[in-house]
Amino acid sequence: MGQEDYLKRQLDQLGQVLAKMLSGLLGLKNKQSLEEGIEQTNQALKAELGFTSDELMALENEELVRILENEKGFKKSHFEKLADLFLFLAEQSSELKKRKLLYEKCLILFKHIEQSENTYSFERHAKVEEINQILKELV
Image (cartoon, rainbow, N blue to C red; front, side):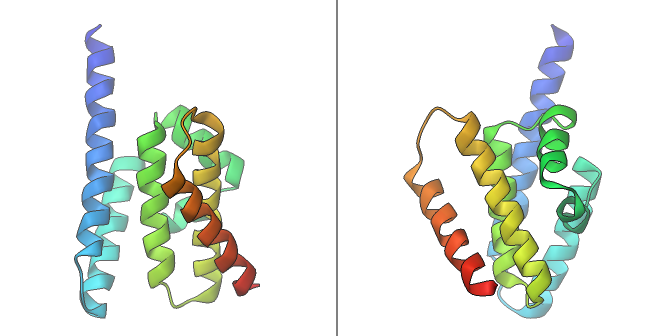
């Protein structure tokens, strides 16, 4: 019983870390601050997950979902926050290849949530549609 409580606290902390990273990045205004924020985000991801955003992007889609769900204990809210973080990073990236890969990973994470979630989200659906449109334009 104590181990389950510990795991639940760890997962809750992970969700808080992901939310804090995203809100911190959203508050940054200039390019230098944004680059520093992205570096700090990568350090936090490495500390919490053992992967930077680049390392997560390099994983095959099925492997990414499997690792996050089975090894890291991700729940729907964690996937959603990570997808939002990737979406933000994609919007900020000036490198076309990296931008496209980030959008693709967002799409994978959002689709995984839709497949495993019983509740339909208009907001999530709108994000998926927007990402699909952006990917069509990037090709």
